[in-house]
Every structure is written in structure tokens, then in C-alpha cells.
Amino acid sequence: MAANAAAPRGPDLPLKKRRSDRVRMIYRYRWFYLMMLPGLVYFAIYHYAPMAGLAIAFQDYSLLRGISGSTWVGFDNFRFIFERPDFARLMSNTLIISLYRIIFGMLPDVLLALLLNEVRTLWFKKAVQTITYGPYFLSWVIIYGVAYAFLSNSGLVNYVIERFGGQPVGFLTSSEYFRSILVVTDIWKSTGYGAIIYLAALAAINPQLYEAAVVDGAGRFRQMWHITLPGIRDVFVLLLILRIGNILEAGFDQVYIFLNSRVLSVGDILDTWVFRMGLEQLQFSISAAMGFFKSFIGLILVLLANQIAKKLGGNGLW
Image (cartoon, rainbow, N blue to C red; front, side, top):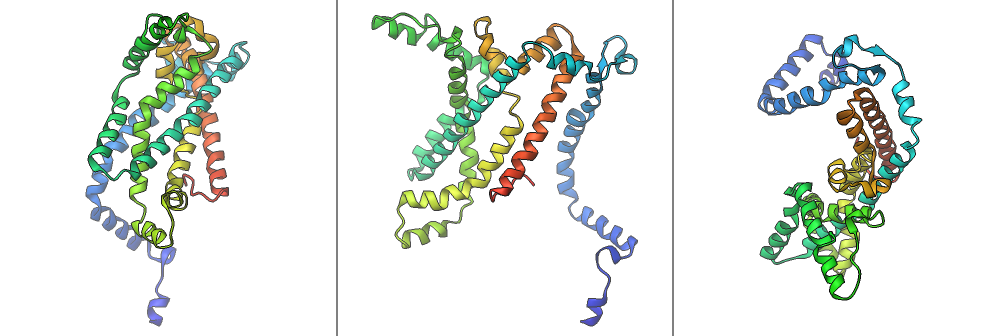
């Protein structure tokens, strides 16, 4: 036993032995590493390799001259963005829409998961889950078509309003209703998918906890409050941190499809502006600078949210 205690461990092991142990471990799990390979290649090609293109954010980039031949301008592109008179409006719209999506978009996911978790009729539970999950597979173009059928001047809602003697309302062209329509359609599309994530977390809760709670006389509500909600807390915090990190995204696909000239004051966001500058006006350097700025802010927000989550007793991302 004394000999075992005196045996070298960790950094004291000979370098060759540590290398051989590492090789044996890799060989033992070789099939797992092989299954990881396509994902690693995907991220290397489509996520890490394009990061070299961030250099054009500091250049007066020209398609003809390329990155190596374009003129370096330092932070001029960033100054151009921050000094624009509409930058404050773009930032405000982006933050407001993102916060609306976070505040009103996460709670329906949890609520639907909790309701489905209480359903004991299996066929009914699967039917509701399938119906609510279906819209997630629809593109925003199709969802806009559905919204147009209901909310346009000649749509179903305005038809009912006119039948009762009212005047038609331009829901899709009114700045008063635009953000609400974005939130409602986003909830309708993504709630079923979000609920599946929470249902997976609920399935991991030990059933013995509920049995012990029943023995102690706890009803359904108290079981939900003291067992179910704490069981999904870490998942909720994780998704919240990820959403906070993407707070400057605001859902480009959805906003671009629903956007029109009459609601630009409340619907024009950073991503739609980048689209116009990059693809319509071919200002690639300006677009890259805005993307770099958004990524930097997102990184800071993720770090802050992760630290706050740990301070409040959660696990965070790392």
C-alpha cells in the first residue's frame, strides 16, 4: 500500500506513459470521435474559417482587390455606423423586439410543457404536442401568408369588424400593432418546439420525489412548485443565457418578411439595415463591422448572464 502511495501520479508520470495512455483512450473511444468528426468539420469550415473575413471590417473592402489588396481604414467603418442619425433607432427597435420575444416567448414554452406534463391520457398528449409542434416547420413566408389572410384589409378579422359596423384596421401596416404581431406569430411558431425541450427536462426528474411529496400530503400545485419548477430551472436559465447572447439578432427572417415601408420606424432593426447595406448597396465593410459589433456585444452579454446565473445559485453554461 505504501508502494502504491509512493507511485508517481499526474504530472510526475513519465511523458511516454502519459502519451501512451492518451493514445489508448483515443483508440478505445475511436468510434465516438469518428462520429464527432462531421460536426467538427462543419464548424471548422462554416464557422471558424469565415472568421478570417472579419478583416474587411477594418478595410475599405473591394471585390476586385480582395482582402489582401484592400486599403486598411482602422475603425472608420465603426465610426460611420455609430455616427449615423438612425443608429439609435435601429438599436432601440432591435432591443425592444428582442426583449419582447424573450419576455413573452419563453413563458408559453414552460406553461405548455407543464400542462402537457400533467396530462395522463397519452393519445391526447401526443396529439396536442404534434399540433403545437407543427408550425415550427413552416417558413416565415408561409406564416406571413396566414397572417395576411387574417389581418390584411380584406382579411377575416377586418371582415368580422366590418360586419359589426366597424372600420377596417390596417394591422400589418400600422406601427401600433407591428411588434405585437411579431411576438404573437413567433409564439405560435416556436412554442411547441420550446415545450419539447422542457418536457425532456421534466422526464429526467426522479419520480420518487413526487411519490414522497404525495406521502407528505402535497397536492398537484405544491408538487409543481417544489419539484417540477426547480427541476427545469437549469434548462430555463441555459436557454435564457443563450437568448440574451443573441439579443441583437431580433429574428431577421421574421422581421424582414413582415417589414414594410409604413412600419420602418418601429420594425427596422440592425439586421435588416445590414442586409440593405451589404447586399443592396454592396457596402461589405460596413456590414462586416456591424456584424463584429453585434458579436462582441453578444459575447459580453453571455459572460455577464453566465456570472449572474452562478451568483443566483444556478449552474450557468460553464
